[in-house]
Length: 95
Image (tube, rainbow, N blue to C red; front, side):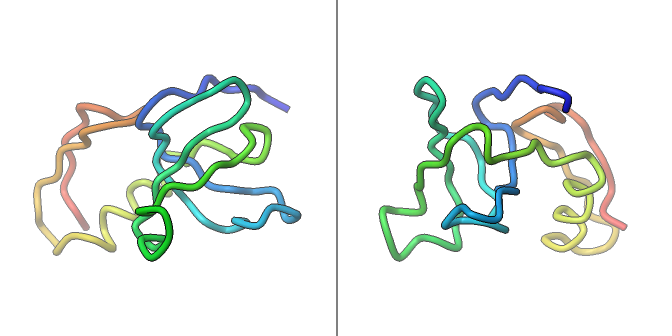
């Protein structure tokens, strides 16, 4: 298993099936020892979208997944600049 460095503003997905938040994806907002504080706008009804998860239960989203999210959120042809995470600074066009 490859260990990757998690940093502030990375987008991660919860991959441990025994976790309460399995299947959710979130943006890292704070890190404390092995606990990540993630933000997801789908959870705005409780604690303003912030939830805690063990760092062993998450994986960094790959560039393919990030591109799928961009294409889902933006119209075809929109120019998008990544403002955080491991792809910070990339400029791409939604397909």
